[in-house]
Length: 443
Image 1 (cartoon, helix red, strand yellow):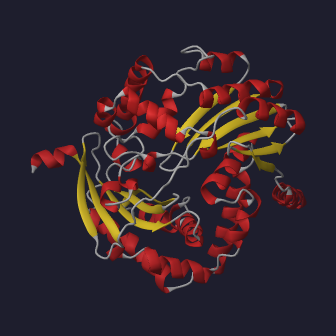
Image 2 (cartoon, rainbow, N blue to C red):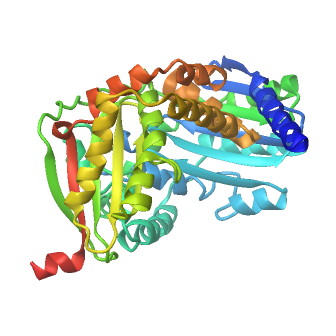
Image 3 (cartoon, helix red, strand yellow):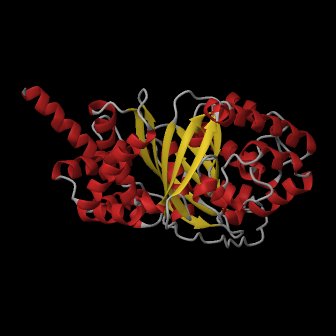
């Protein structure tokens, strides 16, 4: 017993120490407007070089959706100094790895190299920005790659329309460009001209629309010099003006039916339009998601899967975004349980949040879970680099990498009740029955 207590005490001490270690960084702007963030960590001989561009699917022409995600692929095609198809070979032959991803709000590229290859990472990212080759062969090649990705992840994947938002976003948004999914329309990509792709690159892939993060085992002064040499000569682009339309509030439940040929079991989706990720209420909604469906002891899982055995699966999550967020609750019935039964049980748990304060024990568990997630998100150099870029670009406060946990700590039980009442009401949501395609054919 003493040994167990000692282990627990040591584990707690290690956790506290890991949180107490403030993540230090330096940030500054180049003359061309590129923001630079440097983080020194000598614990391992690795370095992450990353660039986040403030361009996502919400920045697209409504008649040319999918461009931002397409560029995530296209800009690996090659540059004036990196031959077509050579990008990944250069990275792997130098002991590195790389990847990229796109959301509605931003596009992120990164390389992880041994620390003695930091200059290589900087050169490659500067090449992507300064000397990309955007030609017909690259566009045609990546068009097929993106189509295959859509087939695998959306068209032929069970519940792909829910996972990628194609079944939800057009109902939740009617004005804002969040109404289309990140993967966009293949017809739009097919119809686009080479000049349209080149203009998209010219507008958004400019240094004053980007943040460069170099994190890991680096020499700060040498890294600063290399950044100036490689990125300093890149000309500043025209200022980007965003004026996306505002959505009218949802005041009456919106109902819809969507069909999926890849499923046998129907699903219920309840989706609420919620505030920007920068709003304190978005943090409260993150906590409510954890409370309702994170783990087997969460309220919805315990009630619907374990006790009542009405659901095969249920989960809630707040998809945080820059302008509006989306709070989604998905549930799959067990056997012949009607979707209306799942809806009733979900609404019962939401009503409890709206009418009563959660218990002290649940509140403590929530706080511990949020703190643990916060620490784990920055447990690797790559995680730190991503967080630094994201907090700067989307929140306007790089130091949230250290201080965000205080926002969660200051969320009270009363805040949870207030936010549940403010956003999670039946007359403010979209209700979607997501059914097997065979059901539609029978009708």
